[in-house]
Amino acid sequence: MIEIQVLRFDREKDKEPYFEKFSIEEKEKMNILDGLNYINNKYNLNLSFRSSCRAAQCGSCGLKLNNEAVLACKSELRDGDIISPLDFPVLKDLIVDKSEIDEKVAIMNLFLVDETYFKNKTHKKEDKKKNPLIIPSIDCENTKRVRSCIECYSCLSSCPVIKQSTEFAGPYFMRYLSKFDFDPRDKEDRTRESVENGLYSCTSCGKCSEVCPKNINSFSDAIEKLRVLAYEKDLGPLDVHKNIKKIIAKTGRSVEPSDEGFIKKINMHKKDSRNKIAIFTGCMVDYRLQDIGFGLMDVLKKNGISADVPEEQVCCGSPLLRTGQIDLIKDLVSKNFEVLSKYDTIITLCAGCGATLKNDYPKYGAKLDVLDISEFLVDKLNTVDMKPLGMKVTYHDPCHLIRGQGISKQPRDILNKIKGVEFIEMESSDQCCGSGGGVKAGKPEIARALSKEKVELVKKVDVDAVITICPFCQYNIQDGLNEEGLNNVSVMNILELLKKSYS
Ligand code: FES
Image 1: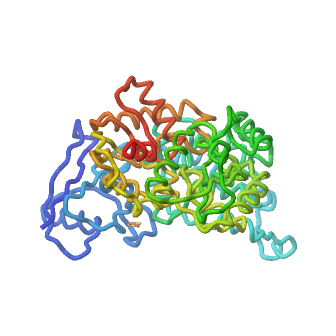
Image 2: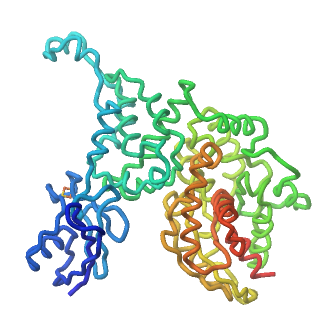
Image 3: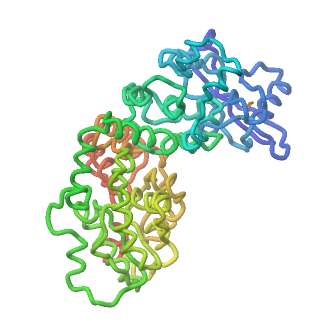
C-alpha cells in the first residue's frame, strides 16, 4: 500500500482547499492518472482532474507532483506523494481555470497573420504554384522545438517571474511570439510585441524548460533568439545592458576594473612553467569578489593542487549572449579559446561562466574540458587539515549550475565533508533568486522581489550562512537579506567556507 495526498477544493462549495489522504494498493509503476482513477473507483469519489490522450501528447493532464509541474499520465506515483493543481485559479480539485491564458492569446493575436490569405481568400493549388511560399530551412530549424509545445501550461505555472511581475507575459507566450517571428508568412511585428511583453524580464532560470514535458527550453529556444532579433532591429536591449557591452568592448571585462584585479595580483610572482589546470575566474571574481579567488588558491594549495590563472582570459560573453548582443562573441570566444585550449582542464568559479563555456562555446567551435569548482574538488578534498567551523549552513542552487550544468550533488557533498558544518537543506533550494539573464541590472525590481522570496525560504531554516557558487546569486541574496534586516545570516561562496575551514 502507498499513501498519497491530494489537494481538494470546490469553488462552489469549499471555503478553503484541504488535503485528503488516500491509500492505494501498490502496482508496479503506476502513474498519477492511474492512481487518481483508482481512487475514484475504490472510494467511489468524484475527484476531478483532466486527461485525454493518456500518452503525454495532449497536455490536458498537467498538475503538480510534490510542488513540481508534471503531466499526470507521464509521472510515476510513489508513497508520500502530494498532488495539487497547477498554479492557476482552481475550479474543482485538480481542474484549473485556463480562460485567462486563452484571453491573453486572443488579445496578443497569437495566430498566424498572413496578409496573402486575406487578400486572395483562396488557397488553391494553382495559386500556390504561381507564388510558392518557401520557408527557409533555417527558420524551420529556429522554430522546430517551440512548435512541439502541447499547451500543458506547466511553464506558466512554474515561472518565478510571472508570479512577481505582470510585465512578463511568460515562457508560453514568448515561445509563440518567436514561432511567428521566424515564420515568413506572419506579417505582425512579433519582436516588438515580445519587447512590449517583458522580453527583458526573464531571468533565464530554466525552470520552464525543466518542467516542460517536451523539453523545450523557452529561454534558449525562444527568448534568447527574440533578444537577438530585438538587438538587430534596435528594439533592445535595455540601456544598462548596452553599457555593459561598451565596457566589455573597452576592457574585455563586464565590470569596470576598479583596482588591480585578482588575476594580475596572483600572477605577479608566477614562474614560467605551465600547469595542466587553468582557472577561469569570470569578471566578478577578478574585480569584485577577489576573496573567492584568493580562497580558491589557498584551498588548492592545502590539497596539493597546482593551477594557473591565465592573464589573457577575458569575459566569457555571458552578459552579451543572454541579452542578445552577439556581435562581440566570436572575438571573446576566440581570445579565451586561444589561451584556455592549452590546458587539459578549465575550472570555473561562477555558474554563469561555467554554463557559457560548456553550453555556448561549442556552438562557436570552441570545445573545452570545463569543470565547475565543485565538480573538480568534490573527490579531492583533504579533510584532515580542516578545523571544525561550528556553523549551520544551507545551500542555494544557482540556476546556471543546477539547470545549466546539471550540478546539485557535488556542492552538497562538499558541504557535508567540511568539519563542524551542519548542512540544512532549505525548501525550494533551486528557486531562482532573480539575478540572472540581465534582470539584476535591467529590472532590479524583479530581482528584488525574487530575492525577497528566497529570503523567506532562508528564514525557515535556522542557519548562519547561505552557501552558493555564483557571484550574481551571492550579491542578490545578500541584498535581499540586508533589505529584510536578516543581519545574522551571510551569503558565502563555497570557496570562502572552505578557506575558513583550512585557516
Ligand atoms: S492525458 Fe494527454 S498529456 Fe496526459
